[in-house]
Length: 209
Image (cartoon, rainbow, N blue to C red; front, side, top):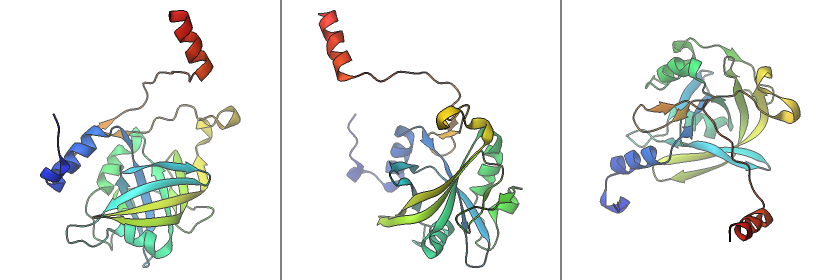
């Protein structure tokens, strides 16, 4: 079936996109408002986009009235945020933080979470997250009804139990986002497929022929 996005509503295109581009990691973002309140919200339009410098990207949709959500407004105002990664033990709290809390109420308190100080920025991270990425705003871009923020990672926080020799990460199983509105997946079932060199591929073709 061919589906032309121009012939469908934004809601239909959102449904298709979020059900087809899967699984997606979840950025559980902490920001700080000018009032000092720490905002917390999950976003699954998120990924790593550069290693030099190390950067992640988060796309944040606007509210129905076209105004920016608290996360985007706070990032654009103070140019700092933390991406906390979501593991299965934190799913309940993550779900609470996704509710439409008013700007003067912190989702951190509502979800009964603890904060820990960051080392390079003023915005705190989640103490219970196994992985947190301190970010400074590298660039922002308005794409339709979304604010795309690129954050340069200035500090990695990784639980000691996850770090193996030569910085190999072992045993980390974040939750993945599947289709809208409420499907997720686990990442603890894995398989390995080593990369091959072009010469090995050529040799394989000769052997097969």
